[in-house]
Length: 348
Image (cartoon, rainbow, N blue to C red; front, side):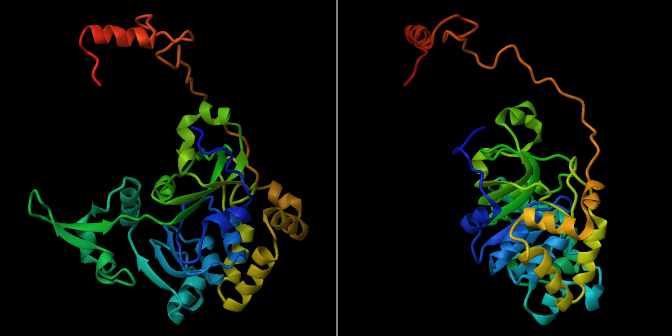
């Protein structure tokens, strides 16, 4: 589907136009292939006051917290690999009181996104969580983290969570067209729901392709054009995380960040070199190649492994032929309306 014309722009322009201080921001990617360059650009522009949604906080969440962009975090998991004494920016923020956090199960977090995607205001979840501290301990959401209501049909007590409708979603995919039709394959997780429950969507992709490529594989389109505000082509845009069909996770570089993130002073130097010191992803890749050699990146490139093609062909795509006649009757629209009027079947 085409909508609103060409939405291609730079990461800088997309972040300037569609992400504002104080927004509810959701990272659409789940564990793999995260939108690292969009996150880097948010840090460079010094955006502030986010309530951040993330189902799986890996280096992406810590980057934003290190940059001072996040006041509140809603998540199910953050990779605090160093524990309370060296767990990274999120742990430091929780301990010094600069960050508040609400913790959900994966199921409950996804339920909030699904409710928001479908236009609901709340959704029922499994009541077993009421026996845990996830239910008992509340942070900034207070009573709105969970609410217990009575079923109007059975009288049973039901546990519910509120729908999530963040202001903006940032998400990285394999490919998109210039209109915003975004295609993704691999471990899906909450990627589609995170995008579709949001009010605005910024898509970064490994490549922008012609619209005909999108049409030839419609089952890969997880975000339709009419929902997308910006499309940004960023090869290696998820590095050091992986993108299926393009490159593997860079464990060496990922380890560098994890080690630096254990202390505020060392991660500050990492951020200065790899975020603030790089104007864009091209500069980032140039710096990486100069430091470690282009061979390091080449070893990460995926080997091709294509799925079998599927035939989407049809005899025709419309009930009307090229002469404007309905195929089964051979009548034009005007003739059909006349017949229906004569038989008393046409209503205004």
